[in-house]
Length: 301
Image (cartoon, rainbow, N blue to C red; front, top):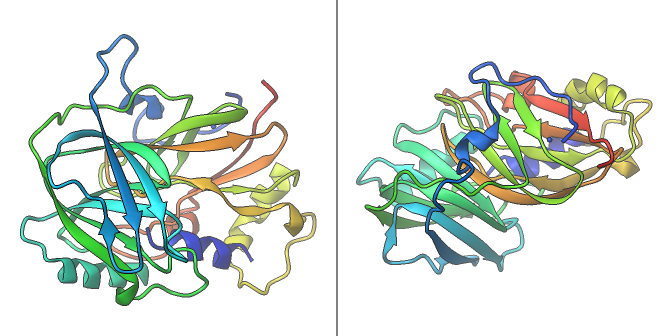
């Protein structure tokens, strides 16, 4: 059922869509992209390989600014997702891992976890100067809870650089506020910039493709789907064979963070954008606790 499939994936780590903008700001995710005519920020390529025991390929000398991350995943269940977590200076890797394991089970965010930028497969993001722990979850896409032993992490220091760097303008945007989405994307293959415009909370976007299922029926039944168990029957009017729970999505970003991901939307199909991150204080995922989801369709270009 929806909750089991989605939470197994999301617990670690739109042109013609009709949406309601989040109430904390009035503009879309393009606010984190370079304005038209602005000088392009220098981009540092970062190539990372995930193995069962390490994060390989982290640069020894990385300056603040715009990075283009490519992830090679040699694990069974990490899902190609890696996070750059800004932490309080002096935070040890083992301390970080212990706090993260509690977070996965609904506990509060550790005080030493200041911010986060995530990448799944490939994407651009920006990093400020500071101390980071780069990590991934070996059980991210497996059908079991993650434990502290599933977290593979390494320390990284980002030196002084371009703290004002912004992501170049992309084909579309998805912006998360507290607790709504503002979606502006087009049909076809595209690169989308996800932006977390919250002042306090961490967010991501998790996209499910519901195929040709009626968007009104999907939206009406989504709360029940999110609260259901894996073996529960689908509500009447929803064809489970049409649903792709692994369609697309972004990494996790802290307040003000943004990053890109690639996606291909089709006209006439029903999609749901959801956030499965919990509040800093802990609790259930935002999609369940705060109804943080948006169901939409796109018209043909």
